[in-house]
Length: 574
Image (cartoon, rainbow, N blue to C red; front, side, top):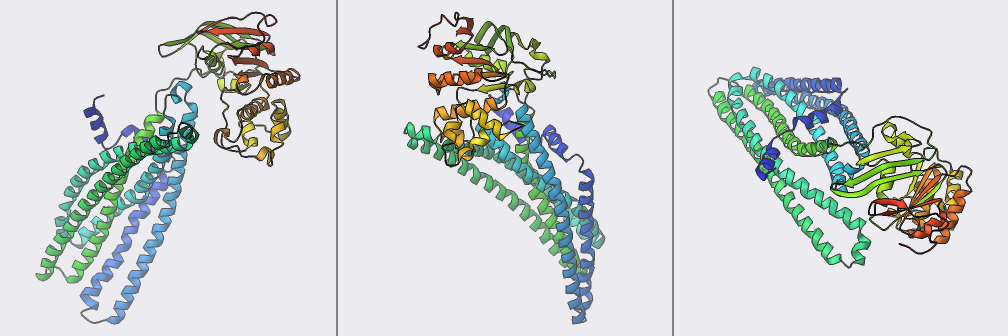
């Protein structure tokens, strides 16, 4: 798409599909919204007694010097004002609950959508940018909802009521003032386009800023190890400078937008003063009639200013709406969509499996069967396709050619999420999060039992070091387990995998963080389990063959038998 077409697509005020998606979260709230709007419209009628009192004050009370009535009128006008404030707060509370519920549903839908993405889709995203969009754009849509529900709709209905009242007060003055409304509309449309364009650029700059902050926090150690502080500060400073420039430009455009609307409404006020003053001077209307009309017109101006301000906020929020809509509606094809549930026993088969990323072949005609309760090792150099086999077994991808089976059932028939519940995986780089040791081990465990957790930790040789910590299993481990050693992180990951009592346990590069003695102890512990799982070890280290019933070698995507376990080399690495 060329730049002119991209720019044109941004200038369009609204994306109908995105708005339909957003409005869908208000389903079931139509009656409450209608009730709120009706009350807001009726609220404008409260001004009628005030206008009558103002008119009587200037036409009767002041000329007759009726101080008593002046005081009573002031008290009455203040009472009507209090009543109006009370109704406004009541309506506001209704609208807040409506908005809160809709934004909750929106965020819930986005969360479910993200978890529903295939691995090929979510790994194509820039996670830091997506994080900024989800957090910031949903908050902007909360502001858009407030602008629509709490400000725009009540002001629109209230303005209609006030227009009717003004036409009854003095149709001639109202007709003159109405001539300014088309000019207001055209000016709002023009400045609205400027706002939309600047907001788009600002939001992209803000995403860069948010992404930069996450990078600084996440890769602090890398930056210091590489002594890249000066370069990183310079890079982040440039991002800050761009954000500062975009923020200033956007704020100035907002100021222009507000100034244009303010001057146009001010012009209409001057027109009222001129024509209204002339009408009073020529005695075609009384002073009280003119003042009451002017007061009512002031209320209308307030509503109109609210409308124009709300429209500016809605235009800005439209960019967030389109961004989120495009994300949740991204074309995504799930590898498998089966629904069959099986009592998985741990057997996995790959039949003539080939796989490639884009145009890069990774696996070629792989045939492999891992029986239940057996132990298998696949060895090969880095980049040979070992991790891809794990991802295929987990159903993250489907093979380009060939088939996978779990207990002889084709993957296309299976509920893959349910199958994963019976598979424990310990990745090469243990996946840990900021929290306690306990929280990391029992993550995802639906039937958590502390005794079982400690038993799993003992099997994983983690309980020994955990029990020596002052806070034991309640010890905070920091982001990515930064406060632990590589071996300790590996042991926690193994404990987490064992807690779910898997039928299949996959160990990806177990010797990376565990020495050979530790690996031997782990395998011995697993062999002594009453219902030992099938074990698949993936490694570049040939020493793992000591613990396998079958051993295969993966070279450039081709899987071949390594040789009988008892005759295979017992030490060294590829």
